[in-house]
Length: 462
Image 1 (tube, one colour):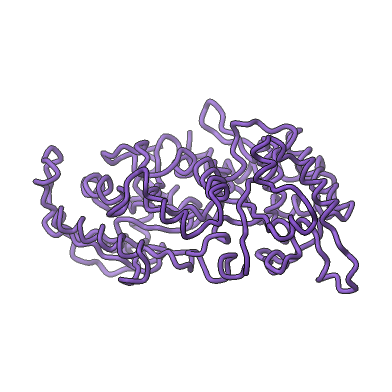
Image 2 (tube, helix red, strand yellow):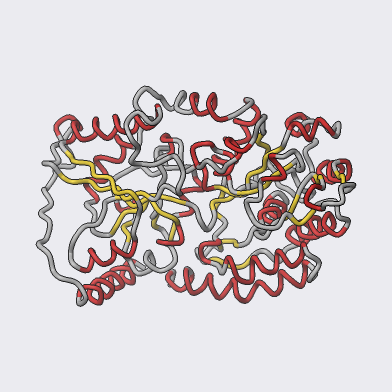
């Protein structure tokens, strides 16, 4: 596989180079990896971070004074510069096309690129345009660089290509599906708190179904004003939640390291049939477009299921924090009858954001800077780094604990290597809407999914 990647790099750079003007090659200083930290001098090396911030309020290049976290992050950059005689440059936005053009001209675009997974893992990474962090002298499993699930999201063969700055508090927003409940609606319909049900081991599909039966008011002539416990939407967040909560997975990895389609399983059929039964009995409704949070914030939905970032204030002003006039609470999706208690109900998926290292960065510089730079921000420790986040973001300790579960136990669902918006999404939505049976849909997905897994992953393992 290593030879394949090296060959791909050579061919890609050669083809792109013909269209670009050559530039003077950067002179990279030599370092002594055995030197003590206080003795390392990087001789003014320019360490460039290109960051896609998801359009939210949580940038890697914040304005001074904008938030307490922003000032902590800027202080960390300054301390890193002073400690190692390095210049940190931040680029707002991450242009992977520009990176490839500059690479062809033998020029550096960035040392770290914080970007959406499918911009890297569906072609550029297979072509050898990115350097694995496992080629650097860092301890990837120290906790600094992410959870096991986030590290698995960057595992290609035996090499790790993606990391997160775990103790910086993001990208926690990339997991899905998350679930919230509206305490006002739960109380109005005299239902038990999902937090209490969870603590008592009673937060199950059966309990959700009984809530859907109890929380339903279709008396208003305007259908848009009807009240339901839950809605399904134009993207299969509810379907994903049911699948993951019942021990179903899209893909499995064999002993040979190759990926195979795994969704055509009894657990998956059970999950999709459950969602379909709720829709067929009109216990849940068609919520229309994704991110339609209006009924939830207007007390016409008890639950809302979507990407995690919609519950975080720092991720955008259209999110729950700015839309809700009262409290909203976090909860994990209820457990299905075939669930395995050790299996997560949340995943790192197609649009997750991670740090990647361009192939022309200096691995020795990375090995020096990352272990220091990715520590908890100034003033924080590995025990206290999220205290302020809890106080400023969550209405209860229980909600924060569920958020931690969603973040820390998320697994990688491998949809990056599948036709996510093709057969997978179309068929799952079709089951909920009664257009096809679960067994039929899962069989129809298989050929397209397996062909994509082979093309984007398995063929590189030989």
